[in-house]
Image 1 (tube, chains in turn orange, yellow):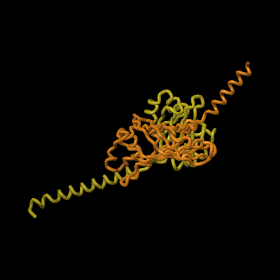
Image 2 (tube, chains in turn cyan, green):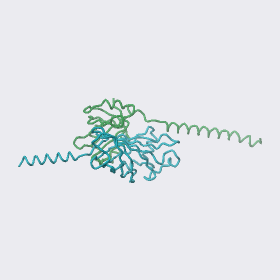
Image 3 (cartoon, one colour):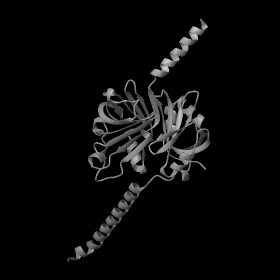
Image 4 (spheres, chains in turn yellow, orange):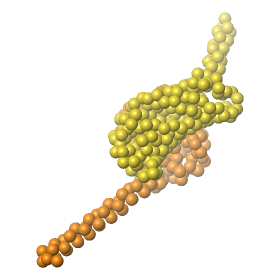
Length: 182
Length: 154
């Protein structure tokens, strides 16, 4: 009887482990480029983004501390976090939750480069909007590297700093997300 | 030129020169503000010196209070490296509380990336960096505290 219970317990643990296809990193990178012809300064990156991918369900998620975006220029970083912009004291986190809609086209068990369509909700500045983007997924052994870039209309997220009107900050900054899952 | 115009002209000149000087001073100040770069963190004065686990516990108790206290401050954190993680072309260093999985993560300043690559799991180290604050991660279901522009504190 004891042996049967032990076997059952081991089998349950083994099946849970087998079904567990979620990979996580805490060092994904998001680059933010809002440069214009008038100003080359508004760009920064965040290298401590949390990301997860579930290769079985196709779900993907990212979380970023807004204050972790690092800019070369101190004044630019101060503006980025200020109340008129990202208001990072009030909205300390930006996040994305989505799903790979063409999961059947991505072979996570076979080395190669795949194109994935990802649809989900992006939350910035306390505002959540749907986003659809194309991501490149490179599978190499047990390592999965994902890369995507898309633009974000700042006005959609209630970000309306005066420098946007003056043409010094792009109305549609380019966001690039890179993550390596092991 | 009338007598009155002759008397007024030195004042107009002075006003014009003063305006020009102010304009130049403004341009120089704006130039310095927008070409300024963050200082080398290794040479910056630290606002706090803490042990990694003590800092994590403060954030776990109240991340709003801890964020108000530590965000955007230069902090020296001492602790043991529990993970190194690839980040873009470099690596980040993590100090994790193994009982709660809460962690501090350090992203290094460009000129100090080589120092980060030398670190190994198990090393005791003192890192100086700009604290970005902490959040509760819904993905990891734990507290995470992040640092940017870090350097090894020597």
